[in-house]
Length: 38
Length: 464
Image 1 (tube, helix red, strand yellow):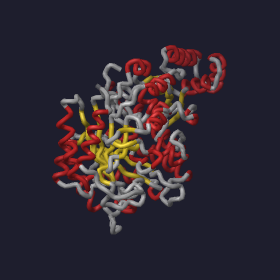
Image 2 (tube, helix red, strand yellow; image 1 turned 30 degrees about the vertical axis):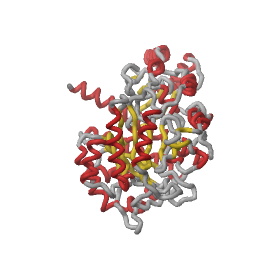
Image 3 (cartoon, each protein chain N blue to C red; image 1 turned 120 degrees about the vertical axis):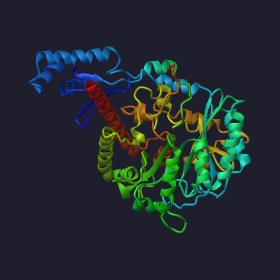
């Protein structure tokens, strides 16, 4: 195997299910998502 | 769009729009580079064979097969499909979910680099009354729509100069949160001078997080963080902070320092706080000041700062292996449970879902805009009257800044800080390029750490 891929969040799913706004205000990168459905 | 770089022995490829992180061998790293330059698989394969003469035909085929598989599964060379998310945000009704309460426009320290002009915000000294604070809480509840989690920061100046109002404000908010189905999260940012047993007990009961200002080594801290008589604060605040953190147990806190041109070797300050003082949750931020200031960071400082960020990342990995980890806030990325696309596009929410409230109840987009008359949004008694300004801030996102178009870090910074952009370029939709350079370096280090941690986890699994 020449490439190993780390587990990362599904961005497309986050577009479909995200945007609830319940996460903390803020860097953006270290935010924790609080929407378990997204 | 992809971003490739080598760091600490790893070949790392970030796929920007899927947020996928790949680790490759040299063969795949070069193959991806050739394809990113626009070469077809066939052309790339020929060139790769010349570059890696020891690679077998099977190696080459496997490499391109891996690349094809990742491309087909939407994890490599993905296109930007998220611009519509920015449009969605513009159309949304704005709700306010966080307030920064400037409960004290005064301070018991006199730090020369303070963006808030020693707490006065280039205006009058003053303390927020409980009536104003209470009205701010009501304003937040009234304007928060169906948002459940609401945040209130006690900020200044030095908020503990007005501790009584902080206590009463929390008491009032707690008394109404159930009836409105809200969950208040309070935070306190303090310089440590007035941290008493009573403050510690209150903060540990009520504050979700506390931000403790300390610049690191005594001589570094006491260069800027002095009292009004010009005496350094280190000897007074460090014991207070140590007591505070010890009593805090497993609750959130972090030490928040500022580094400047005078201590570009800032990792020494981080390690001092960790090794000599016992703090594990750490943050050191670059000073943002007038370029003419002697403390301002310069272009010549950049290579030194880049090296410092790398030293920090490698040292943190060593500490993790030794079972004594420390946290550096800019390296805390969560690849699996991080922010959704909307958050990545829209950023901090200043001027829309986050506002600062002055001691007199005036509203500003954030604490860094306070007392700039052009940016006064309204007040907590009569509400927001500059809806045009709110709309302008709503449009502040990664897609509104042409400079961000080709930046690989755009989905991690959301276009940067509007206040820094204003101070650097005169436009909230501008870009503070120096900050961008440091941000990108921090992201490279943070992603490298994730790769190293994944490798460590794999090694432990293999040993088991």
